[in-house]
Length: 454
Picture 1 (cartoon, rainbow, N blue to C red):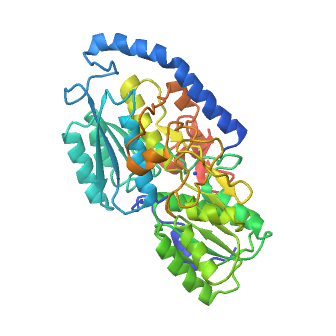
Picture 2 (picture 1 turned 135 degrees about the vertical axis):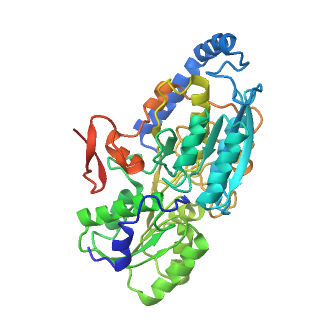
Picture 3 (picture 1 turned 120 degrees about the vertical axis):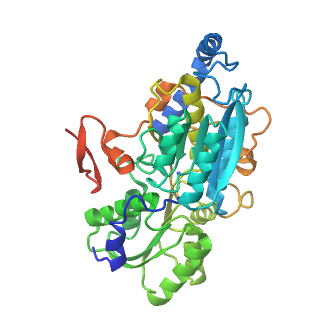
């Protein structure tokens, strides 16, 4: 594989670099698993309620959860935090998390507080410290760095705060990671979005050709995993492929369009683009140049509309449903207690969508297999991946406003359900920089550092 200097440099960027993520169907097996887990949750609800009532007498908490609220009130103080970057994905994720805390059965037990943080680690450190001092029982947030905030997260944990990170991950052991970045996309036996997206691009190009690579925020934890796994796919599947040029798209469609336009002017013979979030900009630049070539991008409404119209491409990326899922994990830890066995590393299912599998979502709530909204319902950068097997109560209204429609009820997780989505131990090193007991650092078959059984 031919690569320029930037490719080699990015391959060794430290994991502690600022981590801003922008950014997910299902096969019958995962869809069935999601349906079965939801049914099991509903069936277990009466037993959970009875157990909660018994616990209430022991701890004086009217909700009957594992411990009384830290601040001594009748409700748990739970923060839902997002990045102040004007990103449609971030807004959907935080809105879904906020809506979860406002639904029954949580609404009687939770005092929900929402926050925004500026995109730098110092701001997030200050924010987490303020939340902890204000009596937070749980903090659900997107981590700006896999390592830079660790000491502050540890301080929060030591004070009795449940810390749950969504999408991006952290290495601090006390925090819960709820993320798709190491998961196998539904229908694939291979983990990692980047590997699967690059494999799809290689297939659409017939196994060879010159490509562009558009990064998100280069050097971030999410972008590094996507990028390095994509390089691994090239090495294994198309070692003679040439990366003509690459750029930092910053998960912004306008930036992606600008950089794609510049790249096309210098390299008009390109035959494929590996584009990160903001992929609508990559396609718009190609359309302006009257050039139709395969594109792999993430989950935007615009991109999937183009696939529906016949554009050659694959849409695969991060589901903003992770915000709501992470909130349910946090509330589950508060309800059952930190020693109940809820995994600290949870892999979220995510989708692969092609022009042959685009399916319009006709309603406000989930319709099995839908993955794009009717034209004009949402903006270009929004995504139907607010819907996920782990968040059956998601709605478009919730994603837009942060407030659930009247009558919509949350479906709490059981501990066993969350255990069934625990991250595979072989991939633990990628997110924790450490391997679980009985495993040691080694190479995964996809070419990335991971864990192998001792």
